[in-house]
Amino acid sequence: MPSEQKRLYRFGYTAQIMSFNDIAESCSRDLFHCITKPGHCLHELLSCYAERPDSLRPRGHDYVLPVCSKKLHKQSFLVKSLFDCV
Image (cartoon, rainbow, N blue to C red; front, side, top):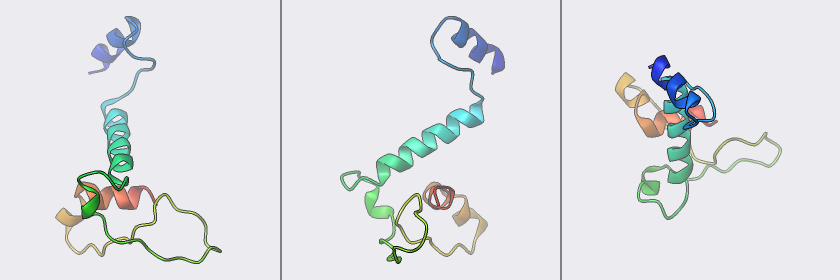
């Protein structure tokens, strides 16, 4: 993978050399940002808004964090994104 990334950078297809994990994290952030928009088809899967006083620090989103009891549930995309963007 690094050799392909270097070749893409050398020929001007990318602005920087990124690892596969960086690319995956960037795509996950972009998808989560799209899902938080009300018109997105997956927006219904997000939980309701949390009501917090204004005195608390701002968070990455205003959704209620789910209670996770199983490892598989913790690894799902929506739950993982909710916890990563806190």
